[in-house]
Length: 212
Image (cartoon, rainbow, N blue to C red; front, side, top):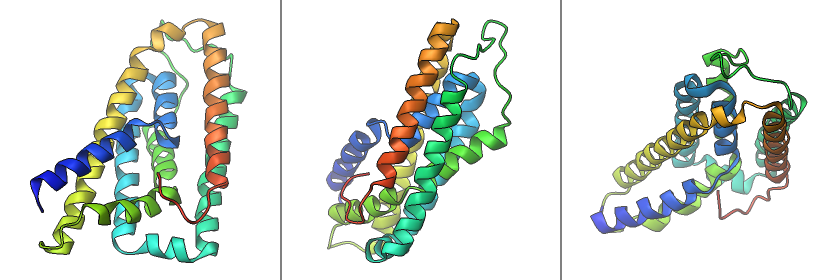
């Protein structure tokens, strides 16, 4: 595919990924709560989740989700309710002091961190439909189709991984500013509220979508 077309795709994807969505909110939440130890499992979960979403798009599930109200509704409710659950969990823990000065954090295994990030990222029908809508805009008719689709897919996953890593490291670096009970309570209320709002927003999604 033409290099200029690929660069345009990179720029477009970077803008999309820079806007915090449900996945990034989750990355920020876990990184602030668990510190740098959460970076690897959370980013790995995001990477695998995006890989699954874009692979399903490439094999045609995006078309199915656009055509079938039932399947879109099932996946939408699974992802949306899970976000609400995580938000309520964070709200319930608002104000509980985290022993950041001693390097301690609420216990949560890397497997759970990875699983949560993967579920939220993969169970987002808007991402799948968005890929279906986005990728054809950057396809060159004078080049073979399949290689172009996979190049675009891999590019998006790499950019998503870089973005999630950047957000995770940033969030982990500001943990020390959240040492007070008041700051932690405010974070729990705001973060939990945003996750719940993201869940409700996902639940209200319609089948015809043009943005991620």
